[in-house]
Image (cartoon, rainbow, N blue to C red; front, side):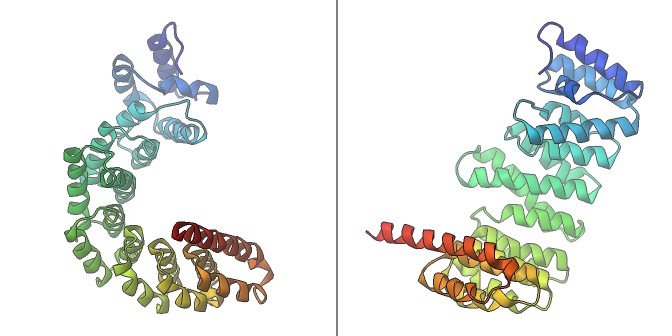
Length: 313
């Protein structure tokens, strides 16, 4: 945190050093944490004078520090950096907001999604907005503000002029919301021509975690592209239907190791007697490098069975 005696003076001194091209020591980064309004004004006034390389370095280090500790809060710093001319800085600023649940953060990210001309920055904003959609669906976010987020994501996902990465991220972020028109968007993407958006549709089906999507997910188990098979397997695990277990077992020996690993893990997540039997049978013939994964999947599947038995009692 900033020093308790003269925080504005401390921040001003640090900013002037940055403007001169100096770096902040890791121990000095918290001076940019938990800014008050006067400090934000000071940052806004000085930030444009700081060299490009230094701005990139400072915001990147702030993201790293926020990942390592909950003792810092960079949302107001990141809000200033979102207006930076460099996409690299804006992208890092978006990442700095990933753990924030403030309504102001949601509004900022919705604006970034709508207005930022860099597809990676806009896609990252769409991705983080998915956390707010989940909170809205669970009744933990104000309805009127949450719906503004949903509409922003809808506009991005449905707009063929937006970059595929942006449309894909927006579609996945919408998936947890229970609204009929979202199903239409997912199906349109699933049958569309762009591979990135089609793959997002498969992920969205898993994120929705509804059994009525299972037929589409199982269809992708036979896809020639291993990335589609892998994402479909993951989605099947999230849908959590025992109807997928027979097909998952076929993929324990998929030619692509990542697909096989995902299938084993998904069977463990779904659990039940059938999954447990398949996993135990496979354990005897599994490659040595799969041994730990299969063991973990068997343990997970057995745990699911115990939970079901206790529930039935």
